[in-house]
Image (cartoon, rainbow, N blue to C red; front, top):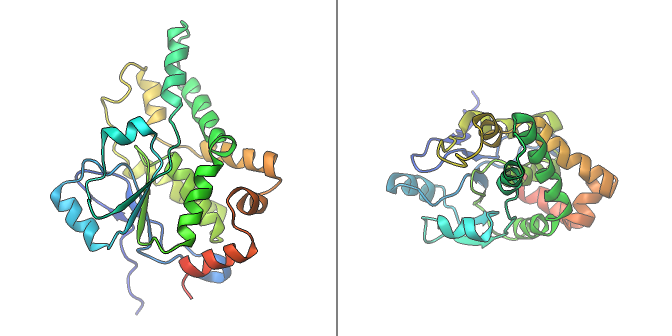
Length: 249
């Protein structure tokens, strides 16, 4: 009898959407290693019980995509973890507030449009941050966690790139990305100056957000493989090393 797979999602009191990227079938039928790469929202509100759970995972590193101001508002609660700041400054709320201030009536359509624009920005303005992440991943940083404030957009794009680089099929990557809508707990007080239907968009993910980023990759780099090599520094040798490190033998 085959052993049951480890749990993917961890129910924590002070963080939501904390989950493992392991178990998905990648290149040559090899599974992504469990308990190596995790994703989450920010780690500033962890309880003592949460910290005990995460210490049990042996976490060594956190890769934090929050902007500088965001990071200062909620410092990682696990002191022994090495935190690497890879700031991708948030733009969505500021853009929507500017539209609102100009007298424009906002709707969910505006929220979706601005979210898609932000994902395009991950490619066109922030590839260097994601390149830095992959440079760390090629080193000995695992077990590790990747996060931002909500752990769904900047983090979601990063995790999609990782799974792509490991050869996980696109439909499986999309399913993993959309798990955020099951596990993320939206803060009802966040951005409460925006209309509720807009806040609903900002507190969730949809496939078109991720599609916007990968469309930008194809337009700017030709294809994903070229982006992995030229944008993220995964040439043939580095890519092979990356897959050897994070895929089962």
